[in-house]
Length: 136
Image (cartoon, rainbow, N blue to C red; front, side, top):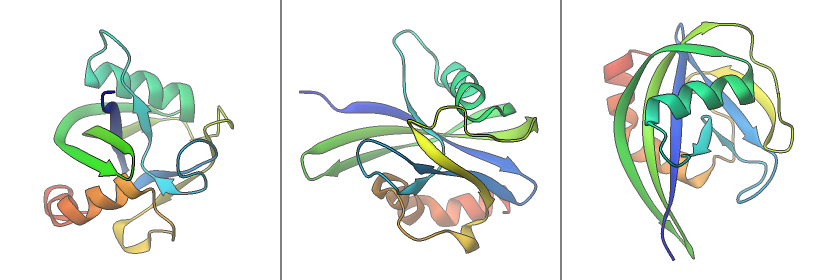
């Protein structure tokens, strides 16, 4: 058994970023930044651009790598590639209600309750760097 590789993206618009509530799977009804599994032969940047548009109807630009997070939680193991992108155009909408059921723009100061554990770990490990680097 091997860890799952995910790509998570802070999509920034002004002083906020995009957050979604998971509607299925592991940790249903928790909040996190957009998060996908990396496809074979796909770059991190291509994954983020493709999935962000397919799942949220949002175009992004200036995609950059941030860091890698390693999460071992109970019997699950995730390696998450954290990315940063800027909002480009279109309004977010739920394009696949099997994966998530709500999208919001928020700031680190106004996070909803019940965060997806790997996302919460990212905030605990790198929250001050997110604030300092991107001046939310």
